[in-house]
Length: 243
Image (cartoon, rainbow, N blue to C red):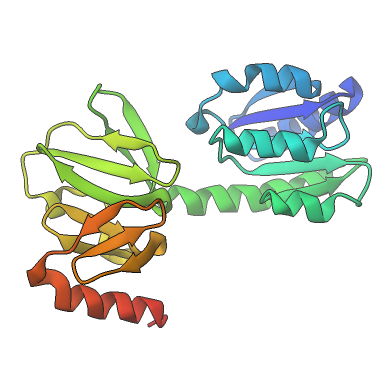
């Protein structure tokens, strides 16, 4: 598990890191901890950190750059790892959860607080792992995709294109089988709808529907085949009604 710890107090930075390390040894979990003294050091390294290279980020709130603002910057960089705030004050709790913080730990940190937090985190990551898969892209790198972050899937020139919510498009290697059977997960178990021979949409990200297309939340227009329309309309209506 790859972990980032950022605090402008070296004593606190070392204490947080040691508590994580002690927990990992006790629970036989391999961890790689990257420590950053203060927000400036972390900010200067953000551009080198890829989303799939970090599993959790521990951020002190009261630093030269407010930890909440730093979390917002991290999200803008499309780093979606859970953020756990550490602080000496409870006054920032509501602000912390506005940036979808996973947890909020009040200092001084101890083994009990850290264990409870990391137990929840491990459970969360295990659940999340079940909703991810890896695909070899068109430059032969393996990319991990979170199913819940797929806006829609497209078939184009014998490749599968995964259009993600962050506007990234992951292009698979060339496929040799039918589009709908080449998807490496059972999309019927999620909120996906096959609306066209070349498109499968995630209904969570539909903004509207016309007689010929879906309008996605990023304003992309996805065609609906005439032969699919009756069933598509029924399935989508049931989705909207929560059935």
